[in-house]
Image (tube, rainbow over all chains, first blue to last red; front, top):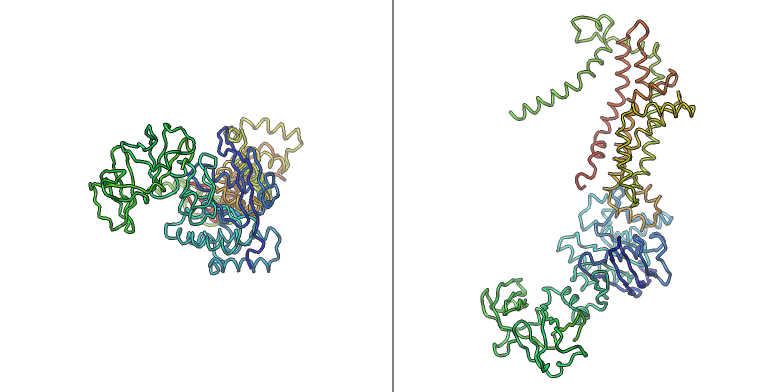
Length: 363
Length: 270
């Protein structure tokens, strides 16, 4: 059975990396539990791939420690870390057949030929590439290459799987189906995986834990639902979710009974007027997800404006609105009758409103 | 119309380049009378006497053997060293890597005559004149910059990921080089090898000053020394030249696809 030995955990402590004086990673610490699927999520250039490469040993950190299975590995070469790496563009060996690609690591470990054959055949069957074993990578489709790249990692039974945006070269349909397959594969192998992506949909579906990175430091680490429903700061709030969360500047009124933003004044429930000792008169960032904005009666409305543009996705409608000084996006049901230029009145449940101050979550 | 003029241009250029070659091939088959006939005879009477004379009287086979040894050794050693140097230059970020490559390029621009004196004195001091290793050493110094340039350009274009995948799969740097990089670099290695070989095979000037004994002389020098005090054996010279050219033509025809691949590597994404 595949996967019996594949359990390990990863600890990263105070990792920092600079390239020619530029800080790429700054004091990054986290842990991945045995068998956990952990996703590193962030925009391009946030340092997530560098972090992954440092864990793999392809890059050296400027400072910090890495432990795999409680053993320090940061001075070891990649070959001694017992990790597998799935590259963004697959990085298959073009001069070898699929069989040789899959068996290469085992051959280097001097595993007996018969065992190599068995293990390669098993993985090939699992990934449904057993018909392609004698072909060269050039003869394969993108999806098949992706499977070979995956298989090359799986066949080794490593302590840790590292993925560098492995699905980003596939077309949308294939990406969606591979996403599901990867999730199933993880379940089946029960292996520890660290997965880098900038695609938040991928992160939400695959990750048991998501670590959001921006500009080389961790913004938030937690379960996907926490990241989505309780973003730690305005960056996470804006980065996760599609369409993007509505974020705008606001301020409390003198008495702390209402929130003023973009020319609107929203009465606060009494319980909300105190938030975490922050200066009441300080500006706050207000965040409301498009799906949390609901159409309402004009008298109850928080925001009134007109529809600038309606994106009809069939299942939903993304309505782009101008409400005085604010530009908002609301996600409305497909049946909701609305056209460009129509007046719109919206409100939200206060439980669903996010408030941030100086990049910290207030509530 | 366009097509006709295009074809015409091709034929003209080919004829212009091939005419001298064709002339001495034809000459090699002419009789002594036909060679000196005025007006010139275009179609020879297909004598093989000059070939026999070149082999029997002028020791053509020995020259071929010498050339094969010298060009072969030069190629193997040059490409071997160049592959390692180029890999290092392409992969490890040396501070002066770029400057070093430029320096190599500058060295390869020196006219041979400018370094002939020092090279001769150096080899003389080493006692390497009139030896294979002497002329091979000189040739390697001529061909290394070129070979390193061709190969380092190629290695730079080779995706790093593939090597990194090999490192993660458990290769040491050496294993990655041997099992992954070099097989992928085969077209470039072939290109460099063939061009170095052709250069060494044809080289005349250094061979002339370094090799003064017929026992070690290479083909170009040997052929140049065919004329006697009172004779000019055109037929034998033409026959020997034809034989000297043949291996190059064959090599190029066999490997032309590889050569083009190697030279245009990285120009278009594969």
